[in-house]
Every structure is written in structure tokens, then in C-alpha cells.
Amino acid sequence: MEPFRQFRVTAASFKSLLYASFVQLQIFLLFGSAIADNPQFYFDWTVSYTPLAPLGIFKQVIVINGQFPGPTLNATTNDILNINVRNNLNEPFLLTWNGVQQRRNSWQDGVEGTNCPIAPGKNWTYSFQVKDQIGSFFYFPSLLLQRASGGYGAIRINNRIVIPVPFSPPQHEFDVLIGDWHNADYRELRASLDRGNYLPTPDGILINGVGPFQENFAFRPGATYRLRISNVGLKTSVNFRIQDHLMLLVETEGSYTLKQYYENIDIHVGQSYSVLVTANQIPGRSYYMVATSRFIIPELAGIAVIQYPGSLTNPIGPFPPGPPPFDFTYSMDQARSIRWDLAVGAARPNPQGSFHYGLINVSQNIILENDMAMIGNHQRYTVNGISFVHPDTPLKLADYFQLNDVFKSDSIPKAPDGRYPALGTSVIDLKYRDFIHIVFQNPLPILQTWHIDGYNFFVVGMDEGNWDESRRSTYNMVDAISRSTIQVYPNSWTAIMVELDNQGMWNVRSQEVDKWYLGQELYIRVKGVGQNDPSTIPIQDETPIPANVIRCGRAGPST
Ligand SMILES: *[C@@H]1O[C@H](CO)[C@@H](O)[C@H](O)[C@H]1NC(C)=O
Ligand SMILES: *[C@@H]1O[C@H](CO)[C@@H](O)[C@H](O)[C@H]1NC(C)=O
Ligand SMILES: *[C@@H]1O[C@H](CO)[C@@H](O)[C@H](O)[C@H]1NC(C)=O
Image (cartoon, rainbow, N blue to C red; front, side):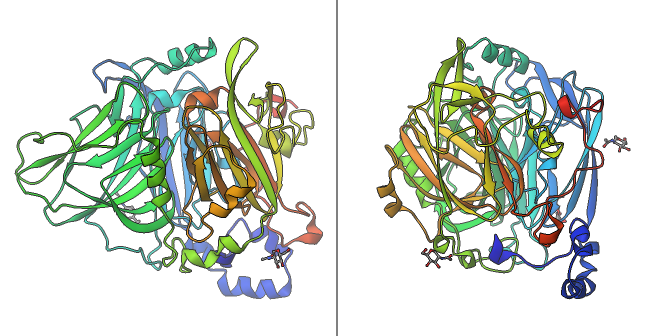
């Protein structure tokens, strides 16, 4: 976001500096040492199957270095991460970094439209900077419904030491990864979707990869803990709560929130929250931590235990009560109560509020309406009438190698136009630095979740019914939360605004795996004017194609 931008010299911008004016060279000489300030970290991750039975039934679980969930990626703002992923599965594999904004570097996004998969038995090194970000995120396998068998893990991006965190340091931080779980193998679930069936109801809910009463969190009386909670599941929203403890919400997906206490929080698929919990209850006892399913029958529960010193038994008393399972109004009111803390800085010293998004003129309006349709005898999910299918070549590579027949930009209308549902490869061309207003319209009686890779956006409004221009008067143009995954309630709409400050080919998708797998996605191609034109430098260019890029399809090695 422009007003937050500071001038920092990175290795990636060195090339453009070669073209730069004398003045910029002076700046380079002053700040050139900043290159050394961004430390590089190296990770070796091996992805393989291991039989595990989190709910009592064994299946092949995808583990990373033998772990499920995979290792926590613990980084600090501006670190450069090199993650060498070795694929020991018998299928192609990619990881994507949910909510991490690879600046100008969609080459590292790890989705089917940006990367060729890592073939079985091969390895590939992701290399990206966690630039100008803080917060709680997670990674997961993006291909072939593999997330149904694990392969996910937490990502923390910590504040640099010079940027204050807007609360006292907690005693300890815990990752809490919550996800619905099927005992069936992901290949079986995938085959079922391929045959045109729905995903079955999940068999349960896992917390940190294990079933009820398997995960414990040790609390010391009087101490305060930060829980970094993500919904890593396939499609089930959850309500999260802790018996006899309030949660102070402080962060969501890289934004510091206005601090407010909650008894329970709805967390939809793909979303992450940080809460502070103070151990103010009775030593010698233990307490339930529960995550119950929302909006499905029967209600499922993930259960972990918070233990104070000396507690020998399981928690006593009833489960902490949650909202009624189908109370959408409760959920929407709660979502509206989550707001941006304008007074504090996130990854930069400037307060978040100094961005004043409400004063920026909107350059373009887009309405994206999800729906379901039978296409060629198969149940598919559509966006503005188009159900996404992947061409044989990732869009990013097709774009780079100028393979003009892989996709056509603007093949999807920017608002629903009543067309007959069809398969297609939807790419919307957008201009770097434009400020865009997007309405997600949901005409179905089921909840939707939308995510944009490479970006955070302002959630300016949501309500029941059909969106129309009059709804703009209800928007929060002051302290709407900025995040990367948002829900759209049944027969409702959600409106967002986003500054296109990150060039690249970016995935826009349903976070629910079945809808994503069956076509509810599109890509936005964000390009600068005069990009690739040296006369207009210093307009920031995209990061060059990685030296180790995997080529496939029509961008394959033989072409
Ligand atoms: C994560 O990284 C931060 C910053 O380097 C460090 O202070 C912290 O101890 C690390 N946490 C873990 C669990 O490794
Ligand atoms: C594969 O791993 C080896 C080390 O195990 C490394 O040297 C090589 O660069 C990796 N290949 C890619 C494409 O990242
Ligand atoms: C927004 O548009 C109005 C009317 O066209 C114009 O007067 C104003 O300067 C614009 N504001 C910005 C920040 O560009």
C-alpha cells in the first residue's frame, strides 16, 4: 500500500537500479547495506505419506519431514525464505502459502496457474521474501485435493525488532490448526468429485492433526498466551471457544484488529486469527478448548484441553456453549464487529489508519457471482457463468513465454450477464495501482469463502440479499478489516476494496476444496503500464523468472 512504502534496496530491485537516475544511485549508496539486513533462511522439507489414524481409522496422511501438521514456518518481516521441497508422493505436488504476499513474485505462489508441479521423486526450491508483512497464516498442498490428507502447517511472520507489537509479549505462542477430517483417502474423495458426487459429511474435526482429547496446551496461572488459529479444513466453518476464558482478538491475516473480547469466534475455511488468552482460572483444573462445526448436521466437535499445573483429570462441566449452529445473523454481526486498529502499525511504523483507503477513488467495479451448474453431466461451480478449467500450461508461464492460445484475458465478464454456464479459463486483466471494488454475490443457500492470493483487501460491507448501488451507503470506509479470506453468507453479498499494489498472475478462489476443484476460481493479471519498457523504469517490474523454474505443458523444455 503506497503510503506505507519505504524505500528499501533489495537484491531484486538492484536490476532496476542499474537504470536509475543519479539521485536514486545516491539513495542506493546510502541504503545499500539494507541488502544485508534481509537474512536468508534455508529449509529442507521432504513430503511423504505416513499411515496415521487421527480419528481411529488409518489412512495415508501427507507429512512433511515426518510431521503432521508440518513444521511451523517461523519468520520475521522481510526475511528471505528458501524452502527446498522434495516430493516423495506418487503424484505431482505443490505447496501454496495462504495469505503470504509474495511481492511481485507470483512465480512462488505454488498454485496450478502459476507453477508447474514438482514431479514425484523431484524437488524444487521456493524462494521468496516475506516483505512488509506480519501475522498468522498457513501453507497447504494446492493440487489434487491433497489437503484432505494433511500436508499443512502454520506460518508466523513476526514483527521486526524495531516495529512495536501493539500488546505485551505473551508468555508463549501456540499454533492452533483446526480442520474438518475425512477418514477416506483423498484420492477416493477426489474420484467421488470426478464422478459428479458431493463430498461426504466429514468424520470429525482435528486440532493440530489429532482427534478429541489428544492435544493439550499447558497454561501457567496469570500468564497470557497468543493462540494463532487457522481453519485449515476442506469446507467446514467452525466456532472456536475456550471454557471459562475470554479471547482478546488482536490480529487477523496480517492486520492488527481493534482489541475486543469474544466468548467465541467463527472461523471459516482459509481464515486465520490471533487471540490473547489470560490464564485467570483455577490452578489444578483443566478446561475445554472446542471447535464445533457451523452450518452442517450433525454438529461435529474438535476438542483439546488446556491444563493448569497439577490438573490430573479431564475438564469438568458442560462444553462451553456456542451460537446456534445455523444462526447466520449472529455470525454476520460478529464478522462486522471485527475492525482494523487505525492507531497501530503492522509491518511498518506508520499507523494502519494512515492509509485512508476510504478516500481513494475506485477505478473499477467488479461483481463476481458464484453459482452451481450441470455442465456436461457434471456438477460444477461457476463464477459469472464460467467454471474454471486449467489449460495444459500454467497461465504464468504461458504469459511469460507469450503462448497466446493458452488463455484469453477478459474471457470472463466483470459482472454476471446471464450467459449459459460453460467451462473456461478466466483471467481478468487489471492495472497496477488501480483501486478496485469487488462485490462477491452469493445466490446460493450455502456459505462461500473467497480468497485472493498476493493481496489483502478491505472488507467494506456484507449483508443479505442482492447487492445494488444503494448498498454503498452502508459501507465502512474508515476502519474495515484488511485480510485475504472472506466469507459470503447464504443469499448474501460481501464487498471488498483492494489496492492493486502487487504485480503478477494471482489466484482468486473459493477456499473450500470441492468448489475450488470444480471450477470456482479465476486469475487476475496485474500489470504496470509500460512494464517491460525500459524507458518507463523505475516503474517496479515483476521479479524475473526464477533460474530453477520448472517448465511443463507448452512451456515445456522441448519447446
Ligand atoms: C520465531 O522467530 C522469532 C524471531 O526470530 C524468535 O524470537 C522465536 O523464538 C521463534 N520461535 C520459535 C518457536 O522458533
Ligand atoms: C534439489 O535439492 C538439491 C539438494 O538436495 C539442491 O541442490 C537443488 O538445488 C534442488 N533443486 C531445485 C530445483 O531446487
Ligand atoms: C477523486 O475523484 C474526485 C472527482 O473526480 C477528484 O476531485 C479527486 O481529486 C479524486 N481524488 C483522488 C485522491 O484522486
